[in-house]
Image 1: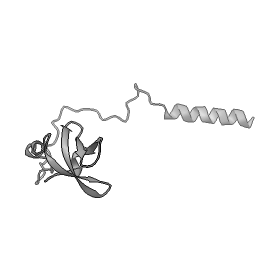
Image 2 (image 1 turned 60 degrees about the horizontal axis):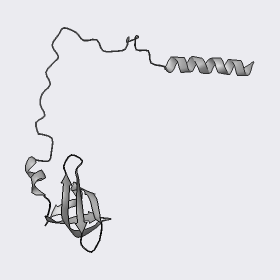
Image 3 (image 1 turned 180 degrees about the horizontal axis):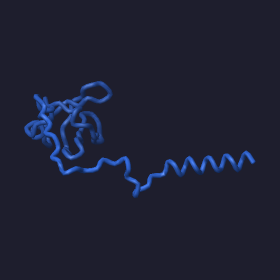
Image 4 (image 1 turned 180 degrees about the vertical axis):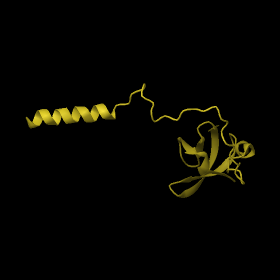
Amino acid sequence: MKKILAIALLSFAITACESNPTDDSNAVKPTNAAPAATAAPATPTPEMSPAAKIELKAGDRVKVTMNGVATEATIVSIDERTGRATVKIQGEKENKIVALSDVVKQ
């Protein structure tokens, strides 16, 4: 008897948690009134300027922060879409991929 009651309660709980696409009683309904205008922020949000992205290019000598230590390296390639650079660290055979935020131009 307890198992049947537990299964019934569990099925009611699961049914209550399921989303129903036809029931939009809590959804915000659009009105014909124009939305209130919001004031623009007084200071612009800090963003990386296009000039900062162009600063680094393949062949540049840079310092890369890895494990908290700045190491000299040369940029092999840059992927601006992902925000990463492939660098050749002096004294190492393999190239490393690092975040652009860890790269500082010398």
